Amino acid sequence: MSKQVYESPLSSRYASDEMQYIFSPDKKFTTWRRLWIALARAEMELGLPVTQDQIDEMEAHLHEIDYDLAAEKERQLRHDVMAHIHAFGAICPKAMPIIHLGATSCYVGDNTDVILMREGLELVRDKLVQVLAHLAKFADEYKALPTLGFTHFQPAQLVTVGKRATLWMNELLMDLEEVEYRISSLRLLGCKGTTGTQASFLELFEGDHAKCKELDRRIAREMGFDAVTPVSGQTYSRKVDAAVLATLSGIAQSASKFATDLRLLCHLKEVEEPFEKNQIGSSAMPYKRNPMRCERICSLARYVIADAANPAVTAATQWFERTLDDSANKRISVPEAFLAVDAILNIYSNVASNLVVHEKVIEKHVLEELPFMASENIMMDAVKRGGNRQELHERIRVHSLEAGRNVKDLGLSNNLIDLIAADPMFGMSREELTAHLEPSRYIGRCPEQVTDFLNEYVNPVLEAHATALSQKETELKV
Image (cartoon, rainbow, N blue to C red; front, side, top):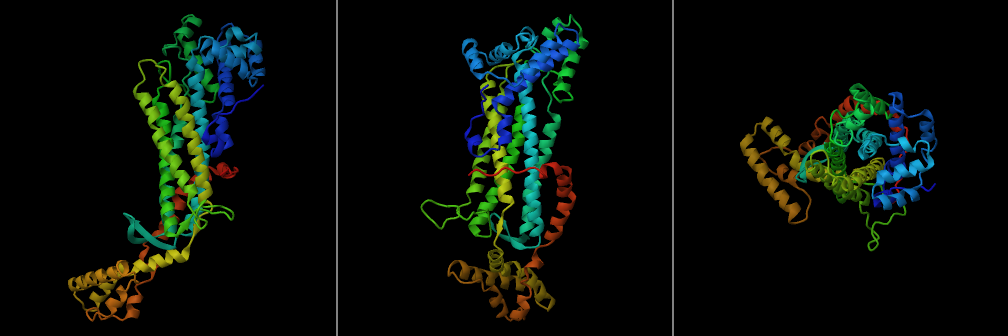
């Protein structure tokens, strides 16, 4: 039988084979069939006229999908579920009379969507863990390397390269917590019927309410779920889709923050994404080393963040027990969000595992700004030597303005230390002043914060998800 794959620009260039398969037609329609088998088995066990031979026949042909026949039937019937019932029934003639017994289309459609979203989230969870592992190694290696901190992208107090990485990791931990919550809270729709009343099943079971409830439980158990949606219309609440895509949007936001920071650091020539031996940065400018991987992360993240509005609007406009304007939208918005986030994490992992740190450039930038940052310590030292704090403050302010003018207007080096050394009010030699220019004196608890963060928050997560770290990571195609 012919097979189909989910076609998307994301799948052809960026997403992993695993995520592509989760949202492929083969996966979708075999899951429909698994649900029909689960329904038939539960109905047989609860006393309806379904036989083991019929179930065996369906199981034997689970993966034999005649897409050509299904497409022909859909052209005739204008109904995808009925088309696949006929395609399944064509190779399961004994089972044909009981396939989809008592169910509505959302039994296979919605339950499958929940199953696929859960599998997609599990894959996303594993990739988040892989990215965290790469960043943890990077943070530990550079936990004590001083670098300029920036507020408003203006030089601020020093931080360290490793401490900055913990900020990226902390947001990923928040995303991981969200993903794990979504996985644990997803429920099957179950068998609720056309308006959620289970009226068709109550009729089949001749008014036995207990069997209607047991039918839901048995199907959920066979499909790997502990519970079903307690009440519904024809569909599960579309707030479920909105919540899942909000979680994916959160990951996109975190990744974009990381990639944006790195693009700025690349401009400063301090930290860069990997650049391979034969890689071309620009077709016109041979010298260019454009941060194309991080730019791609930001580009895909923007798509996911915008895409998350789709299910939110759908949830807000779903009429009564159901309308169909959700269907076409969710068939695009949900898979594309998963594929895009998968691609984002593939690129993120690649970049995080191969970051290039230019320590000499970082040191140069630190030393250019350090005299300004050391000015308070210099002032305190001068006060200890008998100076007036307020007068010293004013002198440093005046000298700082002159040093700033030398740097900004004249293109000269920062000469603040020389200006202070020449000022008798301070009574300090250049050597005494230079002693204040040791960068490690201005990084606070950065190394200790990194160590504490890794030990208390990151390493327990990595240990809990050790299986994810043993998996082969997706190789970038472009």
